[in-house]
Length: 448
Image (cartoon, rainbow, N blue to C red; front, side, top):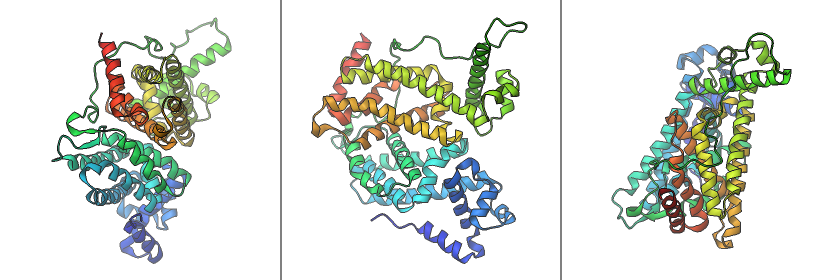
C-alpha cells in the first residue's frame, strides 16, 4: 500500500478547523491548489488567498511574496518525497536503491497526487530558484542511491547510468500523468523497475553512471556548419522586398530576440519591450503578428521543435541498421542542439514557463521521438521488446539530460554524451553487453 500522507491530513485538519497555528499550512495548500488549477503564472497572491480562505494580511504575516510561498511549498513537497525515498531504500537491498527510489516516486505520486502534481510540474515553470530547488531534490535522492552502493563488491550488478537523470526522467513521465489525473500509477512500477535493470553491469565495470562528455565527433552531414540566426535589420529607404518578405524578416528577428532573452533573463521576466528593443521593431509590428508575449514564445518553441525533429528524423532514416540509425539520429540531434543553444534553452528549459500550449508540444515531441524507438521492435524478439512505458521513460530521460546540460552551460557538450545516450536507448532492446559492443564499434570507427 502507498504510504499515508501526514501532510495532507494536516492540511485537511487545518482547512476544517481554521485555527491560527495552521494558517501557514492553509496558505501552502491554497498555493498548491491554485498552481495545479491554472499554472504557476496564474497562482497570484489573490488566487492563493482565495483558495486558502485567508486574508491578504495573513498571507504577508508568513511570506514576503508569492515566490517565497511557492518555494516553501516546493520545500514541503521535497521533504515529504525524501521521507518516502529514505523509507523505501532502507527496506530494500542496497543494490536495488535506484529501483527503490523509482518505486518511492510513484508511491509519492499515488499517496499525494496534488502535491506530486505540483512538485513534478510547476517548478519547471517558476524560474531559476524553483528550478534549482527541483534539481536539488533529485540530486539529494541520487546521493542516497550512490551512498547505498558504498561497500558493495565490484562484482555486484547495479544500473550503470546516472541516477539523477533516471529519476528526472521518471519524474517527467509522472508529471504528464498527474496533470491528466490518471489513476493507478502503481501499475507503472513493474515496467520501470524492469527498465532500470536493463542497464545493470558489475560495479567494477561501470562506464555510463558518470555523465562525462567524450571527445568531439565528426560533424553529422545533416547539420549545417552555421547555426540558425536572425536576419539583419531591414535597410532604410525604399525596399526592394515584397510585404511578405518584410514580414518574415521581422517575424524571425522577433523570434530570435525572444529566444535570446529567454536564455539571458528567463521567460517570466522578459517583457514585450525587451523583445521589441532587441529585435529592433516597433511594438505595433509585434502585435500585428502575435497576440502577446506567450504567443511569440510559442512560435519560437514550435519553430525549434520542427527544426530538431526534421534533422533527427532525416539522420535516423539514413542509417542502414537500427543501431546505426540511432547513432546517426543521436549525433544529429545533439550537434544541432549544441550549435543552436538558444533553441535548446527555449525548448528544454523554458517550455513549461511559456504555458500549457508549449507543455503540450513537449509531450507531443516525446511521442514523436518515441516513434523512432518503435522501429527497434522489428529487430528484437517478442521477449526483448520493452513496453511503451519504457520507450517514454527513455525519451523523458534524454530530455532531462538535455535540460540539465542546457541549465549548466550556455554551450552544452551534448554530442560528447552520444555514447551514453545510445547506451540508454539500446540496452532495453538488445541488452547492456550488446549495446556496449555496438557503441565501442562506432567509437572505434570514428577514432580511425
